[in-house]
Amino acid sequence: MSIAEPILLTPGPLTTSARTRQAMMVDWGSWDDRFNQLTASLCEQLLAILNGAATHHCVPLQGSGTFAVEAAIGTLVPRDGKVLVLINGAYGKRLAKICEVLGRSFSTFETAEDEPTTAADVDRLLRADSTLTHVALIHCETSTGILNPLAEIAEVVEQHGKRLIIDAMSSFGALPVDAQKVPFDALIAASGKCLEGVPGMGFVFARKDSLAAAAGNSNSLAMDLFDQHAYMQKTGQWRFTPPTHVVAALHEALLQYNEEGGLPARHARYAANCQALMEEMGKLGLRSFLPAAIQAPIIATFHAPQDPRYQFKDFYERVKAKGYILYPGKLTQVETFRVGCIGHVSPDEMHQAVAAVGEVLREMEVLEI
Ligand SMILES: Cc1ncc(COP(=O)(O)O)c(C=O)c1O
Image (cartoon, rainbow, N blue to C red; front, side):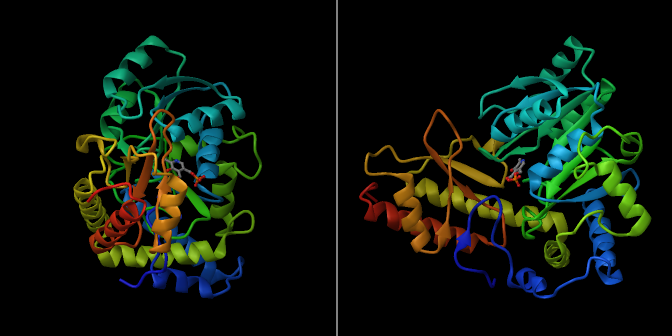
């Protein structure tokens, strides 16, 4: 694999291929037919990944992932709607914050950071409050790497006749979701995650009838997905200046995604990365925060070594000097650090990265290995 230095073992921005970066060496006119075709092809390919063309529109949006999540909630939840927000980490908390800022009523249900929300929880909560209209869920909670049981939760939400909004930012493209089997109103992801594009745009798969009924819901001009979609349908163009180079890079990344073998191959590579990571870190005596059964092959959280000589910043800089970028922990109660399994990296690079971690911990005299 030809990869850039340093190797990013982070949940995005992440390591991209030289081909993907090369695709950004062209300047595109936003009115140009070729660019509009690129956008249309992108949306078509994205919809195909979740088998959504019959039921959902793909609405791309400029900005980071949070912009797309905020736009989805603001557009698809009516102003008199009420959202049940399921939380087991920082991104779930962000969903609640978005509802608060947008002035949408919401209630929250929070479990521990190592405890998935269950379909039974959701069933009970929906029974208890008939004013709820929507449920919002993080598929893979990137703050730890925990996987929530999306299919089971979606089924319960459907049985109650409620609408589901899924933040699949760090899982889309790697973990399977079939829009014809898993009912949802919106599933949100972004360019710079498991599709291995560069950051700069998000996209929302919005159920066609829900989007059609969403005119006037949004309190924002720029983040109104109804308008964004309507304009794109009419003109083939983005409503406001598009992130041209990001679109081109994602298009190129998708060619490679398909060449690799699509979702099953991407999933298999990330699973192999995660397994290599866990095995090698285990040999160093570094413990995973999550049990394997609820660990998604996206990002892994490790307990920091219990040694006063260990400081994350020092550790991080030393590992970086050896060519690998790690990620700080995001837990409040325990000291941890994170290592991403996604991006244009293979199990070989994971082995090398953990070898670098071992060398650094020895240099820091943290581990006697
Ligand atoms: C689950 C999840 N939701 C949302 C986001 C959006 O974050 P950002 O706006 O920084 O792209 C991320 C980013 O990693 C994420 O992992």
